[in-house]
Each structure stands twice: as structure tokens, then as C-alpha cells.
Amino acid sequence: MKRLYISLFVLSGLFFSGCSNEFLDVDQTATIPADPELVNSNEGATTMINSVYNIFLAWDMSSFAWNGATSIISDDADKGSDPGDTGTDKDVLDALTYNASTPSFQSIWDYNYAGINRANQAIAMLPKLDQVTPALKTRLDGEAKFLRAFMYFTLVKGFGGVPIVDHLPIPGNDEDRIMQLTRKTTAEVYAFIESDLNTAAQELPLKSTYTGADVVRVSQGSAYALLAKVNLYQKNWQKVIDNCDKVTGYSLVSDYSIQFKKEGEFGPESIFEINGIGTTSSPGFGIGNYSVSQAPRGAGGWGWGFNTPTEGLANAYEAGDVRKNATIIFRGTTLYDGREVPSTVSNPRYNYKAYSSAFYNQEFTDTNLRYLRYAEVLLMKAEALNELGQTSAAIPYLNQVRHRANLGDTPAVSQADVRTAIWKERRVELAFEHDRWFDLIRTGQAAAAMKADVSPSFPNGKTFVVGKHELYPIPSSFLQQAAGLSSQNPGGY
Image 1 (cartoon, rainbow, N blue to C red):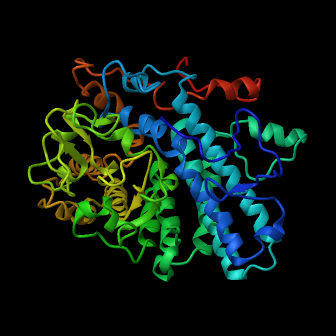
Image 2 (image 1 turned 135 degrees about the vertical axis):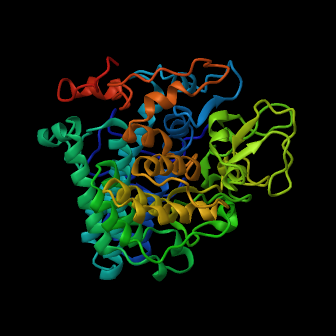
Image 3 (image 1 turned 120 degrees about the vertical axis):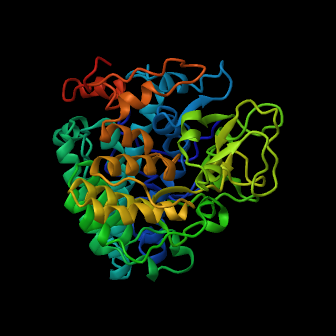
């Protein structure tokens, strides 16, 4: 079901060393040694930073575990597949009966810290490279800090306070050992993220300056958009507005569906997008099993059939909303490339945003992950303005997103109704882009939403335990190594 193709350093298990013969992976087959002279060129330094991006291609980073802990766990998706196929732990994620030994949480923890380690190694190496153009060195530092911030944002949204590993630990150094095993507060983690992003915003160029192969890289707009999202989660509403206003040079594409096809990659709406670089001739460079794990299953299907859209999500779209058919594959329909989904497949709905055409549904596919889009910037600004009582100013930003979806102006007028409209708009606009679970938590909707998530498997909905399910459980393996330096999240995991 998977191939582990990137050698890793992980926080729980064997802890990071200050250096390694494998140092940083460039791709699945090559590594960069610790000797600075071997990457002491513009090309070498760029390739070094590429290795930080490449962690997102890992199966455990962006595929099965991540889909389980962000979509299947929410009211947007069911486990899917066949009833007897648990998907290792996707059944307990779906039922909200997971615990500290649930493998998906371990994967998310390990692989984000593996990526943080890569970023730390790159940040430590860059000052030693005297043959790299200063401007490029500055930009690459900004990229590494953005990516480190993004991974810490993933961790803090899911687990709350986590250890802040901000440099390469020295083997045998007790202070560094304690650093790696001690959870910081949520506020401290957010402050660290903001520091990295503020630095990145000063060091990164505008998206418009990138050409050729560099269009895949993060830009100044990426840093400001992620800062706005970090502010959103902390309810720092004025900072949300201020940082959204700094995200310039982007626009909504006219065709919503084009963003999730090959020809729409890194378009004018894309702010941060993970490049799935698989090809038919070299399939080993894509995101591990991302597409096939979510593709239709059963007679006439071509995949495992996990992470299937719920009836509740399908019903959330208004009549005429073009996003519905761009987000959900329906049984018995024909896809954009002419591929037919026969009526014999196991489930009635599948994730269209994970589809990468009939030519790429293999172990490693070319599907990109869209993590930040300009539509979300508009919705974040609308939400912040509304929360500050500026409801009339918020509505036009909400309507921009609705108009692109072929919908009219929102009928909402009051602050409370506009708040509800914005939250609903986020659901249908960003479905299967890994935000729904965290949106439910941060807005306090989770208990009611999960109770309403009725399906044949859960005819009475699911029980969200307030005071427990707001945070993932800290992996038990980490707590065993922490030996009292860190404790479990509340809720009796």
C-alpha cells in the first residue's frame, strides 16, 4: 500500500543529531552530505531547500494519515472503502474513538518534525555557503522559515502546545534533550510561528518575480496569507485584516474547477501549493498513494475508495453552485477527461480534488495539494471584518467568492447571519483542502456538526466530547520518552 521513499529524522524514536551522512534528502534517490562545500553553489543551495519541500511528498505526511485526521474525522467525509477495511485506523478516526496509540497521529507528529528537522538543517547550513549569491541565500532562508512555520502551524492546530525545536540539537547536550521533549504552550508556539513568518515576509519576493521552474516556490504573499490564518486561529481580527491586505497580486480564477487540474497548477489564485511532480515515465516523484487511496473502489473502480464525501457535504451546496460537481465525483457520471464512473462502484461519492486523470492513477501521482488560495484570503478578511462589527464591509468579500461559484449575493445581513454564511462558505469552498476539522474546532461548531453527521454507519451522528476532542492525543511513544517532561492533552486519552 505504500513505499517509504524518503529517509527521515523523527522526533519520537531516535532523536535528531546535529549532523548526518545523509543530511538532507533531495528526492527519493539522492541525498546531500553534511559537507557545506558539496552544496556551496546557487544550484546546490536551492536543491537543499527543495528537500524541505519534498517532505510533503511522503505518504505519512500528506496522504493517508493526513486525510484521515483532517477529512475522515470531520463531517465532510466518511471512511469509505468497504465496511471491513479499517484503513489501519480510519474507522476509529471516523467514529471519534481514537486514542494516543492511533497511528495516524503518530505519522503527523513524526513527519512534521522530520520536515522541521530538514528546515533547521538548511537554515543552519545557509550561512556557511560563501559561494551562494547573497540575494538567493536570503530568499532560501525565507522559504525554509515559511515551511518550518507551516509545519508548526499544522502541529499546533492539531496537538496544541508542542516542543519547539528551533535549532539542530547537539547529541549528548541535556538542554537540547529537554528542548526536544518539553511541550511549549500554545501561545509560545504561535509566537514562534509568527516570528518565522515575519522574517519570511521580509526575505521572500513577490510571486510575480518568479519565472520558469521557480513558480512552485513560496513568496511574500504566502507568508502574509499564512500569517493572516495564524491570526485567524487566535482571533486577532485586526491583524487578520492587516495581513490579508498585504497579500497582493492574486485573483480568483474564473473557473473554480480548473485549479484542481493539471492546467490550473500554480495559477493566479494559488498562494501555497505542494507540487506533486509525478510523471508517467517517472512515477516515483509524486505524493505517495494520494490519488489512488481516494479513487472509486469496487467493480469498475480503480482505487481504494477511502475519504468519501458525506451526504451532508453534498447537501451543503446551494442549487447551481459549480463547486459541488468540481469537488465530488458522483457514481454514474463522466469525469472531465472522459473517464466514466460506473454505477457499480462501491460508494456513491468520491473526492474529485484528489483525481489526477486516467493517466496518473498509480502509486505516485502528480496531484498537487492546494493549501492556501486567494479565495480563503477573501473569506478570512470577511470573517475578521464581521467579527469587528464591520458587517457591511465584510459582505462584498463573501460575495466575491459566491459570484465565482455562480451564486448570487448572500441574503445574510445581520452580524450573526453573516458569520454563519461565512462559515458555510468556507466549508463548500475549501472542502477536502484539510481545513474543515480545524474550522469546526476553532469556531465551536464541532459538537453540533458531528451530532448532525448522520450516515448508515452512524444513524445518530457522532459524539464529540467537549474538553477532549478539540485536540489530537499526544502520541504515547513521545510521552514515554518524555518521561514526565510533557503530559497528555485533556480528555482521558
